[in-house]
Length: 569
Image 1 (tube, rainbow, N blue to C red):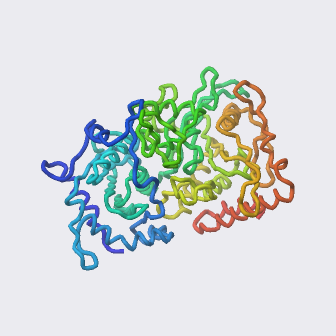
Image 2: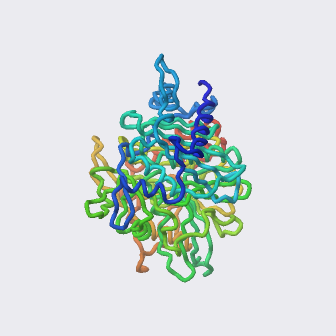
Image 3: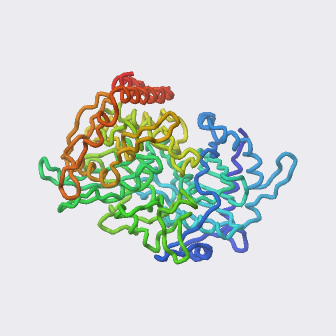
């Protein structure tokens, strides 16, 4: 690739223009951008706002990584290669210059630009604190809301000295069809995007670059939510404090479960939210460090959501592609117009008794345990809750990152099976290295860690030869998941060894909200499938898992060896 140092220099020059009058760049602080943005939005009956966008999901396939030869290996998709072919053309369109004999004046030199600065992280660790600088062209006044919405995600404070500076420049006005084109230069801390007005690109773009830089400093950035749980252990009657991390691709219930109370209602018990989406694992001391100050949630909230749905009835809640009628009423489940409504809910909008007092978890030596949950969504033969014991197996499932695709990632493949290392589609660099860092963390703190695979989909689905569903899965739904996690947290759960997966399966010790025994037998795979069908399906799944793990030659071989042993491959 060519030399793109000019990209960073050009962006820094654009920001410098914001310090002077009569330029095309305006830095927004305080309420000014909110006032402008609301002029083009739909007001809800709760005085929050919604904006509808042209692009309604991330342009994940068309996001290319630019940098060293090692980083460029991540551009495997044909769409990424297509984006790379247009790199020099799009840079000329954005910054100006000559391409294929044609002179471009550069849109950033002529269009109005909003500039918003925020700080990622709690600020307690300079290696996990980032100055984030967002620039958005606003030829269309509707685009003012992009910077306003994103600004709610992070801290509005002065730039922090001696920490990394990250930059994103987006020119939504350039038409690139149904998806934008995004170019990440992680080693420079720069991302340039064209053709998309979807705010999630800003949020995920900064996280992608920040997690790459954090990794270089021994902090593994993971796509996981975090919370603090206080639960009474029935074995000794003590209230114990646990850190909880929940991994999960979009649509697997990560945000829902981080906000769940788990029906912990005894004196001294609590479920306290810390983070919604990304945290850092500091390997040296086991710290779990937060990044953001808000939820970025799917707006398909139903009445069973007792925390997030009521909290969205706040003037602080803002959204893209939320269904709002002419009276300002919100229809959370109306997806005819868009299946990927997204909202930002500041943590400060949550009830104080549901919010932890820091976005960082307590030090690991102050916790009674660190519970790791891998959320997945599978409707056939993955048990609803499994306990995973060894560091090698835990890391194996981290590498598998199993779930299904959603409208947020690739709407054309929503519902299909997918495996993404760490359930993190934003990894930059060698994925095997990410697994090794995670393995190092789990080994070092295994005396504190318990790990579970949580299938928020269901079991027992049957399809015919044409892939048509002939039997719907048995689902645990949100309340069932809440009952099961409460059994884990209160230490009432009963487990049985599962010879098919080398794990333990939750089989009892679960009660419902009224204290009655909850029927775990309904999820028994042996009663849902005949023996031959079940054996064939499990064998196929386990073979696919090993084939996936074999793709990572830099991964510590002990992980693959252990997974082969327990999966009997």
